[in-house]
Every structure is written in C-alpha cells, then in structure tokens.
Length: 270
Image (cartoon, rainbow, N blue to C red):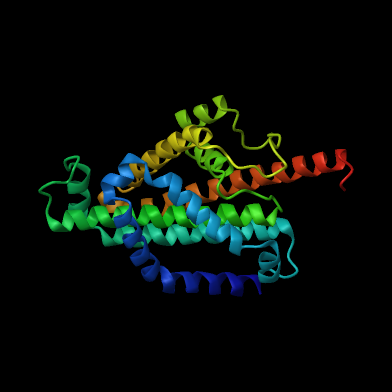
C-alpha cells in the first residue's frame, strides 16, 4: 500500500511539473530575472510568503489524515522523501532541457547578459525557474515538518526557516548563523508567547536571507557546469541537498518540540 501511494504521488507530481515550471517562470520575472536571483534579494520575501501559505494549509490533522495510521517518524520520512524525489525530477527535466552549448555560453556570459542570444537568455530563465521551484519544494517540506512536530511558528518570523537553509548550505553561512546564536539541534526555544518583530530587528535576517539567495543562485549554475552529464548531476544534487535539508529541519523541529514541552511542564501546563 505504501509503495502504491508513493508511486501515485510521483505520478501526480510528474504530471503537474510543467504547470509548476510555468508558475516559476512568472515568479522569476517578478523577482527581476536572473540578475535578481544573483543579488539574493528575492529569497527573504519569497521564503516568508511561500512558507506562510503552506504552513497554514498543512495542518497536523491534514498530515495525519493523508498518512492515516502511520507514525510521526514515518510521516516525516515520507515528507522528506517526496520532496527529494520531486527535486530530483526537477533537476532531470532542467538538465535535459538545456543544451550543452547553452550551458557553456551561460557559464562564460557577461554579468548582465546584454547581447546574449535569445536561446542563452532562455537557458538562464530555465535555471532561474528551476531554482525558484526547488526552493518552493524545500520550503513546503520544512513547513510540513514543523506542523508534523506541532511546532507553532510565526510565519513572519524568519529565524527557523533561515536556520535550516543556512546550515544546509554550510560553510561561511553556517559560521555566521552560529555567531548569531542560531543552532540546528540542541537549541533552546527563545520565546513561547507570540510577539511582533520591530522593523529594525528584521535587518540582520534580511541580510542573511540575501546571502542565502545569492549562494543558492551560484550553486544552481555550478551543478550544471558539466554539460554532458548535467541531467544526472542536477538530479542527484537536488535530491541530496533536499534530503539533507529535510533531515536538518526534522532535527531542528524535534528539538523545538521537546524544548517547548519541557518549558510547558515547568510552568505546570502539561
């Protein structure tokens, strides 16, 4: 039964991928195209709006009904696996759609793309749309995991989403997150009561968001840098990074849930 359900989900996603890609192209245009993606300014607001939308829809009741009778651990693994497979399919389609000549031209093109042939600009648009859609899949996965573990989040507070992305990307971004006290795993809940963040408090999160967006754009080029094997690399890269991000998110929200339970118990709310 589980295998039939998995095959059904994969088939449905494959059938709707073309429609998703068209949506991503429209979203990309609103972000300023490839230049907008490279700047990184797109990520913060896109992450907030996408996460907020799916977080509201993917209630714990919805997830329990969809995977009726299954354990929390099983559902979490299914959310991660489905997102990773969707990301893998997306990478395969994108790599196959862009020719070796287009990839070579993209990788050696000028910064602004001025004077590039139309097919090269279309190649950049395909890469940009793939990145937008990949991040959407990953954000939906993170929102689903938060809901599954019963972690109540303010969708307008970017810390949890940024924490997962920063540590998934690693390197200097993870170091910056560590310096700001952001941790994946052993991390105490910094608030229980909902509060609104003042405008000036959002500034460092927006800056981190821009760096995440710029790093993601850079990586979207790197993974297709070997034209003859771009289909396999794009698919494998998307699958591995999405799965790793899902596991980080699961660990993050498990710890959040345990921390909040301990605090509630200490106040006599249990």
